[in-house]
Length: 76
Image 1 (cartoon, rainbow, N blue to C red):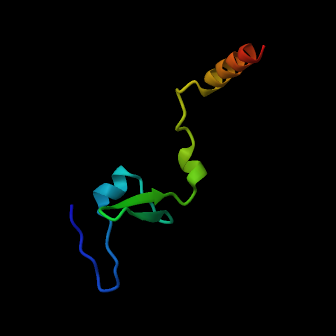
Image 2 (spheres, helix red, strand yellow; image 1 turned 90 degrees about the horizontal axis):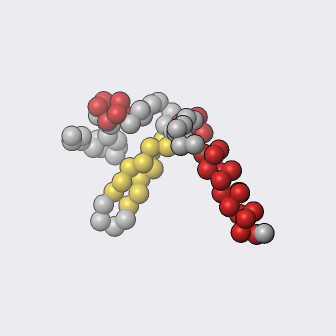
């Protein structure tokens, strides 16, 4: 996909990309320049809400309890 830059330095995010990455009004874009390439990272308007449910199915509670048990055993 390709977009043009206006005189004011503006461009349009193609609809297919907005839909794929769920970019919505109020979100911000962070531009990362490493000297060779430019990366654009979306920062949602509400980052905590965007992360909600991401750990589902990871058994995080069980893993935490297992790590605590292992720490207790090491310390004993």
